[in-house]
Amino acid sequence: MTDPVAGYEACAAAAVRCGVRYLQLRMKGEPRAAVLETALRVREATLGSDTLFIVNDDVSIAREVDADGVHLGQRDMSIDEARRLWSAPGKRFGLSTHDERQAFLATRRSPDYIGVGPVFATPTKAVPDPIIGLERMASIVRSSPVAAVVLGGIDCGNLAEVLRRGVRNFCVVRAVTRRPDPETAIRELQCIWRQAVKASPALRPVP
Image (tube, rainbow, N blue to C red):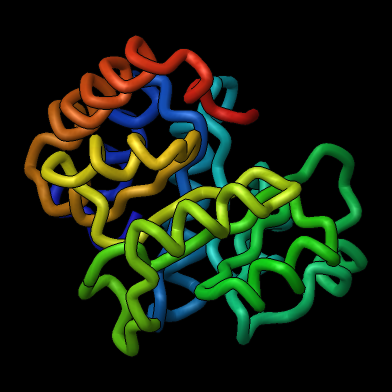
């Protein structure tokens, strides 16, 4: 989640009601105190649910709010260092990748999952990474020995096209956060997902 128009708590509650598997808090450039306060509220909204709460970038905040994991970028600390600082059992550690080489090197660090993208153009990042497109996305996902979550500009208009490439895990930001009713937005995406799974049961997500 990045600056959802419905508010962080409302968006988190909608994700929980819809059974979203992972919910990531991404507040780039915000003061640490503001991120921590929001993370505590989101943790409260997800606690005891099937929705796993992931904090972006900051392992200290993830540890402080007892999140379910942390997602690291290419310029953040290494996964090895993050695991050293946060050794609680069962926590998830993810790593962003933006091309084939980064994905290969990332999997050697044994993350729980990698992010792969951006697949399409997206304004979510202030300095966007180069678009990889559908074919490179599919190739990276096929080659990954760990769960791969594709992202970047994915919405209801192109999700079916993404899923036809054999993708099992995807992430959206603006497709939900820019909508005043996040629950409706999530359910629209889930409807597309269910149709894809019905056509190809092998698409069921990797835990």
